[in-house]
Amino acid sequence: MDAPKIIRKKLREMESEINVATWFVDETKTEGGRMSPFGREVLQAAKRAGLKQSQIAKFLKITPGAVSQHYAK
Image: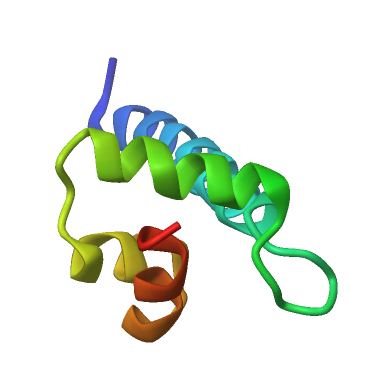
């Protein structure tokens, strides 16, 4: 396989991964921007897995303060 074909294939794979990640993060919030029930479950799972609040905030694209509020529950 030549280089342009390999590059196009990898770009398609990356685009697919980005779409999945974007969908996942979008599902963690309601249309009003609050945490959805799914988002709260994701946050609690991340907490149980030992992720830092700052890591969770960055991944879910929310403020560290919002993570802190849900983290305490």
